[in-house]
Length: 92
Image 1 (tube, helix red, strand yellow):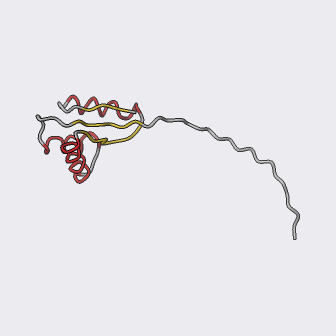
Image 2: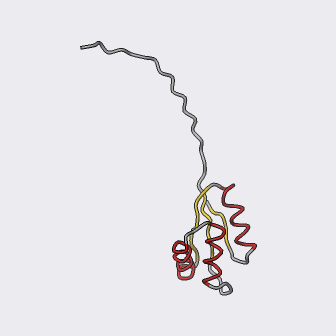
Image 3: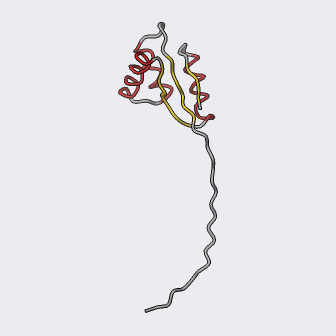
């Protein structure tokens, strides 16, 4: 049996505090289901199934969080969705 050896180990931890935001798309009476689906596929890189499910939620609930991430990641996506005439916001 070997005696217990105590080794000094220095552990460096860097904690990066990143706030998580949600990109929320809102319902309107102007854009078609197909257009919103196409936008979510193009901008948010959704699969067709994801985009369709989000679009149904948007229609029936009035809004849907379509993507989570950092502020820096979501703001350009929000801007592109709004540029296409769909209402969206980045919310905490």
